Image (cartoon, rainbow, N blue to C red; front, side, top):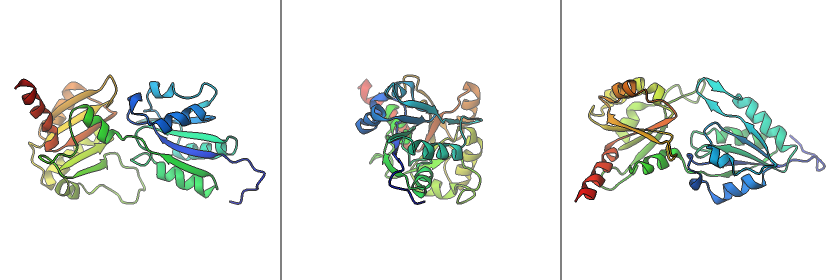
Length: 256
């Protein structure tokens, strides 16, 4: 697309809001929220972070939650393009990090194809922050030297039909699954079939880093029963591996 010099075209900032705790929002991201003329935000962005947005800015909810999409992805992209042609600073505010299961790469490609400048402002991803708030290090010299981040909710028509759970089970000591709570009944048997011991520990963390953070602990053998009994639901991530047991060593140290 050729843009005439007289045509007003702004810049879109893909900003990561982090996992929810407003204290984890980057200074650069907060500054952009204060300067933005338009902010198009996702469903999982916390209310405290939304309060950082300039009162003069136009705020648009483009949130996507299971079974309830405010805007389709294609509509969101078209909205970003339209707003960038009307305003100088447009912020696309995403939960976590834009490039970690946030569709930031898709939006960036579409915007650049339309001749619109884009800048990414990384955010802290839930796969690191939520375990940390539960005293679970995703890597630890005594427990795990590798970690894999994987989505448990795959879209149709993607670059490959399914996650290779066997490769993940055999190739990583810590597995962090995003958006996988609804598919655990499929994922866990696949991991066990691939070679993971049924006694492998697993933690589910809901609303990570927020005051309402909830945790559910178990093993691959019993976690599905616990989920059913407690009614544990999304939004949550799963952490699988020996690192989940690290919190128990902290309890022992505290009691010494």
